[in-house]
Structure formats: structure tokens, C-alpha cells
Length: 509
Image (cartoon, rainbow, N blue to C red; front, top):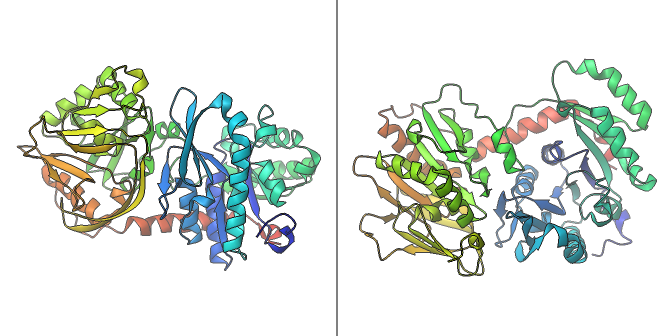
């Protein structure tokens, strides 16, 4: 199905644009997806281009942004990289890895991106749209824009905002964040910078993150509608439910909501952190308080430490060494501390990292090899291609249970034959997915390649119970509910709140 000339045959797409990055586009799309799914429609999320290191892997091994995977869950469908055909994964020094339809196809600088990648980028967006409609002719696309649609220095090469809106003749909503201040200027300025044919596509405005009595903005709503001749579809109150941040900078502002925590977790805030949605299941545990560790300190205040994934593992290992955190982690281990590494974090816990093809930041280190923290006798060699796949396995430690998740990593890890490997054991029946080593007086150093490991309820509960046991805490008196069920509940709550304050019926034509 070629879309050109057949737009009259498809349900009118809804596109959510923002007056700026962080205005609330991702959550708005998520809410609309669930609202329409509950009303009997067939919504499918789409974002032509996303820039994020918070990724997910579809069932064909394709990488996509986690936010589009979450939106697919809100639609009740299986995520596919076609929903996010272009993913840019920043790796520092103004460079990004370019991923088209789930596959890594190159590295680009910010300066050269639009020159080298604009034409193939637009082709892969059109290809994805055609494929989605061919497979799902009755669907309604719910499309997310990126940043602002009127960045005037980039607008002639903008792949994912007004170009997509015009191509599909979408009904567009403009979302603005009143919490940032200057909401009237945000709206008027954005609309004034649009061409007349672009402005005509804006069918409604949403005021997001309003604190206090909504009736106090009634005069503001009337002024906006009078000035723009565009209806304000809704004023969305400040919502407390937590979702993964789109940008890792937001982690510094992300708060843990545990009120009476029994366990305190320290997560190392790596400069090139990736896949931070791995920790959402811990954020939703009432007994756990999460703190982000950004500088050298005594780590003994934490009941366990997590080393997260990294987009530039060697670069981040150098950060740990130079900041003193590498030594802090070693000292913590000597005190029988519990440490868990995920993906790049697992690699850094090993003895040596070798990067012969300069894939993981070794350009900063001329010999292309660097020592790891040295807590696990593991050697990692980074290869030219990376592994991306869904995982179905079974754990051996800390309990026997089925495990689901996914891998995204460059590098092969094996036992370091130059070290004593007698005490290290596999975590899973698939022997290359993770290892652990118990301390002599309690505690364990462990790591896994599996992203989403904490989403496995039985495994997560047993691991946390090991921590509880080491603290002489009683075992939980009630069974912990499923994280995925909690995620569904959060999406439902989000959709219900939006539905109370948002009227999109005029857009459903």
C-alpha cells in the first residue's frame, strides 16, 4: 500500500507536537493510545526519529526507543521497530549511532547528520508508514513529534515533525508545559513560526502540568482560543505517576517515592548511561529507596549498588577510575557489599576491557585496552557488530525461575583465565548471560547482560530477599504484585486522568 493518493482511505492520524522538548509529548501519546484502545479503536504509536539511549529490542532483534515500546504496550500490541524507524543513540563528542528499522547502520556527527542521513532517513520513515498501514489498514496512528517543530535552523531538514504531519495530513495537537513558565509565549511563538499550511494542521492545544485549581486558568484558556482561533482541548493537572525519563539528564530530578524504605539502593550515574528504564521495577517497590550516585563517596550507606548499562563502556570505566568511584566500589565490596551490574555495568565489574575496533570509547585510551574494576574474573572484548535479541532463559541463582528480557551490547564476555575463576558461577542456564560470586561473609558481586532483569517478579523478589536477609530484615508478609501489572495500572491511571481533562472527539474523523 503506497500512501500517496490513498490518505482518504485511512483513519485520520493524530500527531502530538510540543512547544519544546520535555513538554509532555510522550505521556500524552501514551495516554491517547490507551484511551483509544479502551474505546475500541486500533491505535498504533509512531515516532519517525527519536534520540535516546533508553532502548528496547523487538522480537526480530530490532532496536527502538523504549518510549515507543511503552506506547505500544498502552495500545495492547507488540512493539516493533517500525514504530520508531530512526533511533539516534548519542555516544558523546557530538556523535551518535544511527539505527534504521532496528539495525545499526553507521555513526554520524551532529554537523554531518542532515547532509548524509536526511534522504535515507525520510525513505525509511515512508517505508515504515507504508508497512504499518499495509499490515493494519484500520489502525489510527498516534504520532509523537520531537523537540520543537519550529527550530528554524533545522526546519528545512526536520524529519519527524511537520514533514510527517504534512505527509499524512494529520490532526495535530500542540502540547505546552505550563510548569516551565511563559506558556502564552510558548504557544504564540510556536504558531507564529509556522507556515500557514502548517498552522492549519494544528487542531487543538493542551496545557500540561498545571498545578492548583484548574478553574484559575479559565481566563487564560479564553485568551489563547481568541488569539489563536484554536481550541484548548484540555488542561492536564500535574500527575505524580512515574514514567521513564526520555533524557538521562532527567534522572537527576527523578525522585523515589518510597515513604518508609527498608532498603536503600545506590545506582551509579554514568556519563553515558543507557537503558535506565531497567530500574523502574525497583522504583515501584514500596520498601526501596533509590539514590543516584554521581561522585566519589562512602558507599556503605547503601544496601546494594547497581552499575547500569553504558553506551560507551570504556569511557565510563575511565570516569569511574578518575572520579574515585572505582575505588569506592572496591572498598564497598571488601565490606561484603552487594553489587549488581547490568550489561556495560557487568563488563566494568570484570578485570579487563579490550576494544580493538574503537567501538566503546577507547579512542580516549591509546592502547585500546583498560582494566575493569576487577571484582569478577571476566574479560570482555568489543567486536565490530553488536548483539540485539529477546531473551527467554532460566535462572539458577538466586532461585530457579523463568527469565525474560533482552540484550543490547557490543562485546563478548568470558572467564579470564589469568584469574582465579573457581568462585564465580553462572546466574542462568544460558552460561554467557551473567555471573555471580558470593563474598565470604555475605553479599554477592553479580552481573547480567539481560536488560529488564528486574521486571521478572520471582527473580527480583528473591534477589531483594537476599538483601533483606543480609540486613536481618523480616521477609515480606504479603506477596509482591507483578511489575507488569503495575505498569498496566499506571498507564490506566494516566489515561483516566487525561480522559477527565481532555476532549479529542473532534479529532476522531
